[in-house]
Image (cartoon, rainbow, N blue to C red; front, top):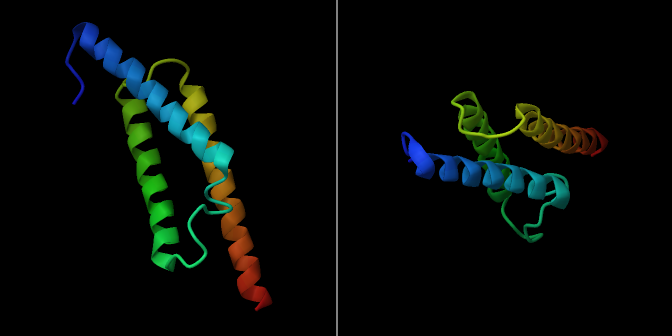
Length: 102
């Protein structure tokens, strides 16, 4: 829960902003959506759950942006989200092509 006003609120917003940007930057740099770091014998539900969790986190990040809880340039967060979307769509295209090949 974010404080209503004062120094605590500012500190919480700075921390939340750094956390959101850091997580999405790490997600893009590790290419988790393209080559999953899950073990090869992981059940398919695990891979699906990764996508669901990332989608939910993106939803909450946009919610924070909309409510003024993210500091700095909104374009930075939107560019990170676009990067995640482009990586996810590349993976989806690879999956579709492999289904057609088989």
